[in-house]
Image 1 (cartoon, one colour):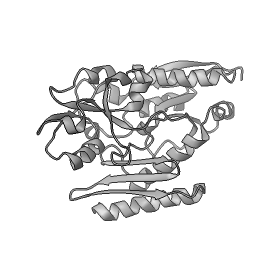
Image 2 (tube, one colour):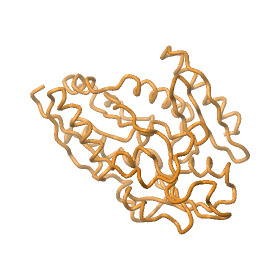
Image 3 (cartoon, rainbow, N blue to C red):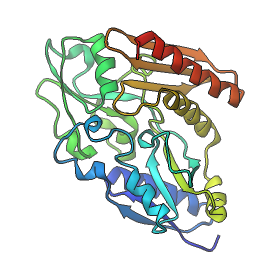
Image 4 (cartoon, one colour):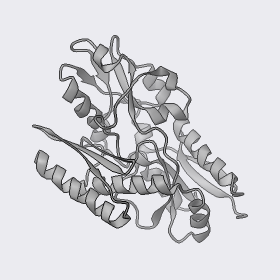
Length: 290
C-alpha cells in the first residue's frame, strides 16, 4: 500500500506507545503510517481528578479520536479496547485487534493480605473497588486518575493503588508490581490488555491493511466480552467485567446487595458463543437486580 495511513491516538505515553506498536506491525507488512495526536475529554479532566463515571464513563477517551477519522484528519483510530464503547459511530468498523497483553489487574504498594485494617486503596474503577471490597470490606477506597507515571506517584502510605498489568507492560514498569490479582476472582475489564483499531467502513484500502495485523484469537475473545457488556448496556459507571481465556468466559457484575460472578465454557462456535455471552449478561442482571 503506497498511501501513508494516519493513525489517530491520545497523546499519553501509554497511548502513543500502543499506537507505535500498530505502526510497527503495519511496517512489517510494508505499510507506512504516521501518528496524529488527539486530546480527549478524558485527558482534559485528568488534573481535576473527577471520577470517570461522573464525566461520562466509557467514551471519554475515544470520542475525539474517532471524530478525527470521521472528519478526515486521520485514517484510523487506535484505542485501548477497554475504553471503546459498544455503541459506536456506524461509519466506523473495528478493523483490527492486536494480540492481547497480560489482562490482569495488579496492586502497587502492598499485597492485599498485607494491607492493614482500614488501609487506603486508590483506584478510579468501580469494578476494582467492588471486587476488592468483597475480600477486604475494611479497606478505604479513594479516587485515582492520571497517566501511568502520575499514578505511580500517588501510592498511599501503607496502602496500594490498582493498575492494569498491561499498562505497566507497555511502559516496561512491571517491576513496580507487588501482587497480580487472580483474574478468576478479580475479573478484568472488557477488552483489558488489547488494542483496537477503527477505520471508516468505506475505506477499503485501510480496511485491507489493518486486516493484516488483526490477531484472530484476541479479536474473537474481545468480541465475546463486548457482547456481554453490550447486552448490559453499561460502561465505566457499572461494576462489571468479562474475560475470555482458554475457551472460558468469566463474567462479573456488582450489585447493591450481592455480586454476580460466573464462568462458562464456550463451544468455539462464534455466533453461539456471542449468544451465550448475552444470555449470561441477562442472568447477571437478574441475579443482582439491575
